[in-house]
Amino acid sequence: MIILEPNHIAVLTANCVSSRAAQGNGERDPDHVPVVKFFNPVGAATWLATELLEDGDTLFGLADLGFGCPELGYFSLREITEIRLPFGLRIERDIGFDAMVPLSEWAEAARGAGSIIHAQALIRHLTRSQSGPPKAEQSTS
Image 1: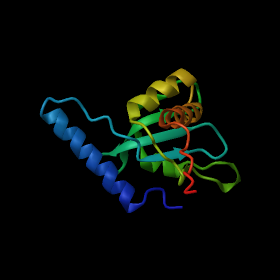
Image 2: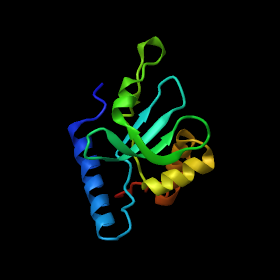
Image 3: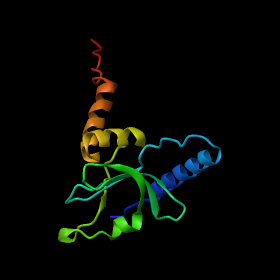
Image 4: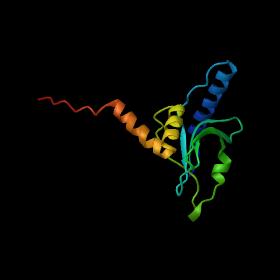
């Protein structure tokens, strides 16, 4: 699997540019929605990335190595892709990932829940309950 598609790289890079511009203008950093989620298919490690720095390797986002304390920070795309897991597996990108909320909300939920995985279930539940029940089709009779 290609770990990052060109569209991911474009959005991650644009997010980095907008964050640097905000910092340069003395403004608050934008609270980006995560672009990609990486995960260990045989373990608890999970990463959410919002930015890709100019070096093409350093990502910013939320990292959860499975110890109960997800942290915001920088991590290396190269290091993630070089991880070798049992059975010939590697770190994967969640192709069905839907970020739903900004990174600050992910961080708060993950810290409270103890992991990104548990936070994802909470965020899904909250976003569904805020949108309300599905509207019933109206009859034309």
